[in-house]
Each structure stands twice: as C-alpha cells, then as structure tokens.
Image 1 (tube, helix red, strand yellow):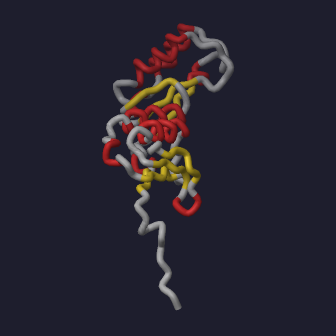
Image 2: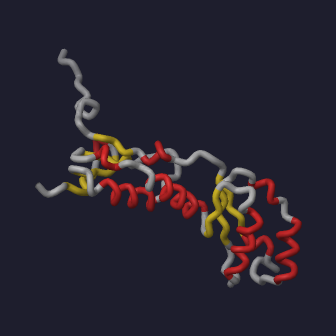
Image 3: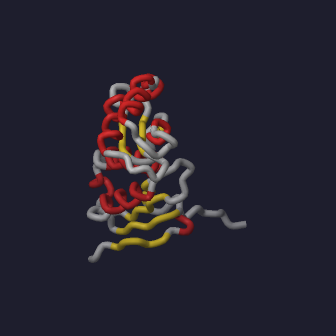
Amino acid sequence: MEEIINKVASSALEVFDLEDYYPKGVRTQIDISQWLLEGFLLKEKDFREHLKNHNWTQYQDQFVAINCSTDAIVPAWASILVTIQVAPFAKKVVDGNIEDLDASLYEELLAKIDYSVYANKAIIIKGCSRKPVPMRAYVLAASNLQPFARSIMYGEACSAVPLYKAKK
C-alpha cells in the first residue's frame, strides 16, 4: 500500500486565519430603546434620569456597542450621552451593533500587522470560522494582503476559491 501524502500540509500555502486575531473579551450591546417612552419617544428629562440610575459598572472591561433596536428617531446626542456614561468602564465603545463592534476591533488589530512577511507567497484567507468574524474583516485582510501576496485564495486548502493572482 502506498503512503498517503498530505499535499496541502506540504505545500507552500500560507493560511491567514482571522480567528487567530479574534479579540478576547465580553461584547455587550446597549439598546437605547429601553430608556425611551414605549421604546420610541425620547423625553430628555426621563432619559437622563434613566442614565443617571443605570449601573454602568456592569460594563467594566467590556467591548460595548450602542444602538437603538426600534425605528425611533433618536437625536445624535443620545448615543453620545450614553457613550459618556459607559466609556470610563468599557474597553471600547462603538455606535452600532455587535458586528459593527467586531469590525471596529478587527480594523484596529489588522492595521498593526506587518504584511510584508507575506511577500510573494500564496495565501489562503481561511473561511470557515467558529467565531463571529465580520465580513469587513475579510475585506480588510484581503486588501492589506494584496500588495504583498503572489496569490490570494479564500476558503480551505482543499476547496479554495482563487481571488487574486499577481501579474508577472
């Protein structure tokens, strides 16, 4: 019987796995609608009172996304005021949902990578992940890798989709 050789493992392909960069920490979403009258109407005095009485320490060292889950028309200052309250406790605060928060975290992390180590290499941006990697992270990784890579594929080594090949 012939020896089975794992050609993928012995290839020169470099795997760029965004899961390796997944920021550790608790993610929390603060929904402003909880402090609106019937979830839709902002009464400034009541809104400020709710914020004053809220336990902000519960967000200690967490990543926080601030949004409004209803179709309420909320003035910009409302999200800013919530940010002012939570910022002393949170690691990071963004306007948006959890996916926006993760995208923002990835933007910061991916900006710090030295992509020159991928010069003239065939790269696979690993697709399937167990963690919630936002699409914006994949787009950002691809755009950062492209100036250096010989080729870029997406997916798994056994079934990668070709995305880019440098001109010779």
